[in-house]
Amino acid sequence: MRVEDVNERLELAALAGALERRDLTVSSGPADGAAAILRSGIGQVASLVETIHSTVAELSETSQRVSAASVESERSSEEIAGAVNMVASVTEQQARLIMEAGNAAGEAAAAVARALSLAEAADAALSDAERGMITADDAHQAMVAVEESAAAIMDAASALVSRSGEITG
Image (cartoon, rainbow, N blue to C red; front, side):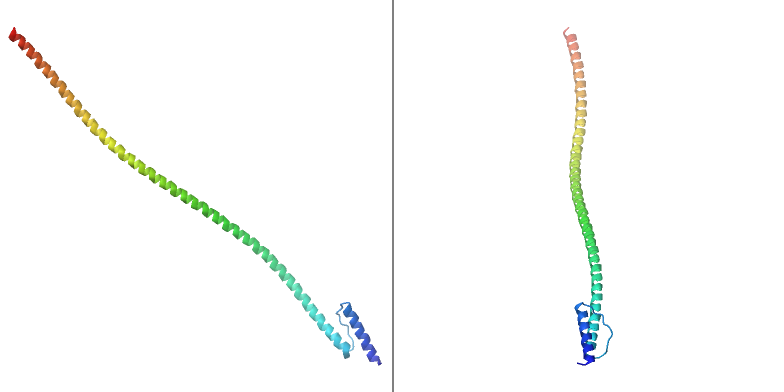
């Protein structure tokens, strides 16, 4: 066996041992043969592992940002849902108040209609009372005339009695 073959086998054994320990650092050595090819492959694997490692770090950082954004989005969604519920509650209260105001307006309209009806009845009663007062005044004047007539009849009867007494005697 040649010295070069022995050196290459030793270098291959050293590289294999490093791979077993997961050591991907490439030491410099002769640039030819199987050891050089293995060293080049290990270098490419090390570069690939480094790329994967940085990609995983970026993904982890991005995942943390997405998670934080998700938490913020959830909080915002809860605030929006709370605001929508509050608007719905206030709208429901306003609808109830509008219905109550409508009912109150209906009751007020009914009260106005009753008041108008009572006012018409009061107006009719006033007219009847006025007619009654006129009738009572007419009856009073008639009674005064009857009293005057009765007094005149009494005077005439007294005059007749007095004259009848003069005639008889």
